[in-house]
Length: 152
Image (cartoon, rainbow, N blue to C red; front, side, top):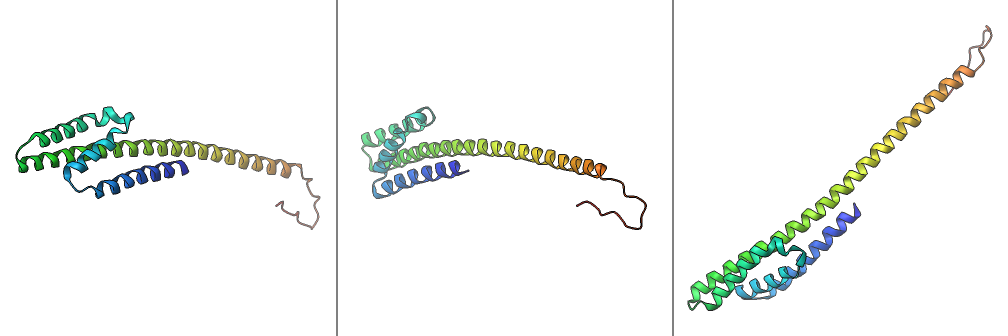
């Protein structure tokens, strides 16, 4: 279980640092660009986030070439939304990997518990047989007025 907690804290801290860095940026377009750059650093997830990143880049490009301020603002907001979608996909992917790891650990622990239970049951059965054999080996007392002492 320690491994799962460790990965979860690493994932959480990585995204917390990135979130603080984005909070310092003021413009929507700047935040979108920074988020796109951050998401693109995860080469292993390019296939997963590629479509969202491309849409964010396209929206930023249109915002830069748009002459009208309201349209540029809307396009920058759309780019930020797509960049956040890509970031959320990365987070979900990391959470799934962590969950898979925890599930495998849990399965291994459950298997070990079943083995230990079986060993305990076998040991209890051996103890019961040994007690029975000891009881059978005790000499039968002669018919006297003294009662035999029960084994413990």
